Image (cartoon, one colour):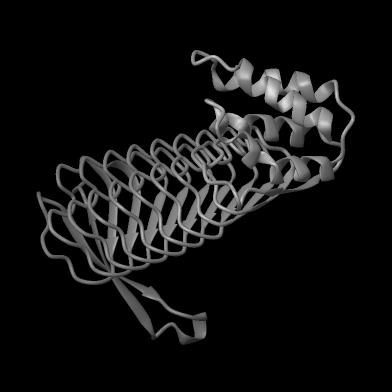
Length: 292
């Protein structure tokens, strides 16, 4: 255990401002290969991180813990970060293991995650699952901005609320939010799916070109602004300027629409509810799209 702590301290103090995430991870991975340790040793190190809070690059410690975890023989690792004042960023970097994180985490949780699973029993700051390729992330609390930015696979579940700009430029994968979401959900989205169980703020699906966004609650103004493809489904109400400058794609709204901006084909679509034998019971949506 003392060897791991000594190596961690040396690694922290070797960091330069110009170091890239990959360089930080690779240096930590080299350290991990030279040590004999078990999953329990990683857990013990995580409990002692508070000793290093005054180090200039303390927040980068997530790269080191991620390298240790990915190089460990065991598949499941428990990390304890609940007693730290400063938050550790980049936990789960390129993750392939099953990580159980006790406490809140900093930015970039699950950055470039490749597989496995990370469960955070706390809150997460911004950029959860950035450039994620596979695996699963579960945040038990709220998360900040830019969840799932540029992700190409995997699944992210946020059990609380999220900030603005989730799913920015995502190409594939799933994002599920049990609470509410901020502005610009699915901006520049190319594929995959986003489901919001609560309400969303303005500019839902702006510049979206593919994939599907489902909002179980209400959406505020400018839904589908500059949308070029894909589908948005709103089971609640929509605000003003729906479809503003939308060249293509579809917007489905079950509730009321305050106003539509532009000339569109509007269809009342009736969707059967329940089993085929009960198909007389229907749910109706307004489907908004450009005329053929």
